[in-house]
Image 1 (cartoon, rainbow, N blue to C red):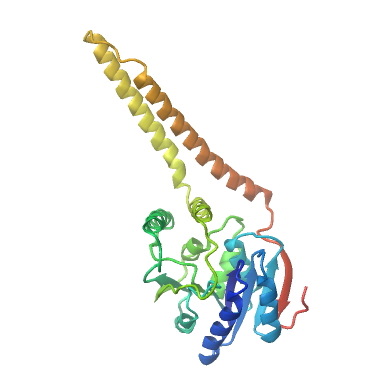
Image 2: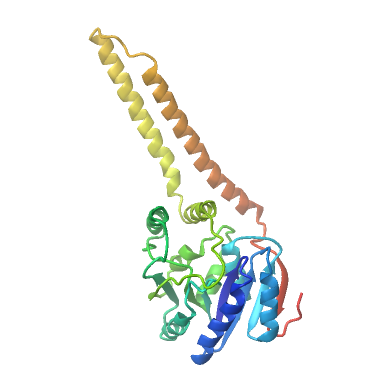
Length: 309
């Protein structure tokens, strides 16, 4: 059986279309399936839409968080609830085309344990957004040792891979990078990013930046090396300024005023603040791990013959 995990945040209008189109594709391909929607603390009628779909179709299950815990938590909750021999993760807005699920399933039957959906294009995006995404993917790719330029959360995983991901004790996870990190046999399947069928994207620039920062910090400690680089740069600048000042003094020239010293102090202060910020961010993640709080809290569930709670 194929379990399809579908995180949803304020996707009231998208849920019925996601159920209809995904179910139609899998039924035509004669693939036994279940659809697991995870309501990530939505403020609209997303949970009511999931519950209605569950009552109408026994193959639809649903979980609802007590509050918004984020997409990563929703993916893990869906994988933990999944009963299938393999699990796919896709977006509720259908930008991940359900038509690709049968192809992913066939590749899994051929022995591939991770089937990565890779983008042939990124759809409609601004130039600045493309630049920011490119920088993020290059940094993350170096961290995990694989090409992340076309990576997405649209994946199909064998049950062994799912169990490996669920066994990880860390709280701050980044699904897109963790799947290739496991090292299981993987292949790629190209897909075109579709336009949203309904509604608007809930990803703001700030939320995307936070998501990117969490992804990089959760995958590598390389940004901490920036502290060392900045320290060396400031030290070299100070040595150069000191040597120039000494040379001018020995030659009897007028020693520059306070402008150079002020610039040096500003550079030093900026580097120190940036270094403290990086250290503080990583320390905050360590603090979150030490507390060992649950990744998410499920308030309600429905579907597959279970009593609604």
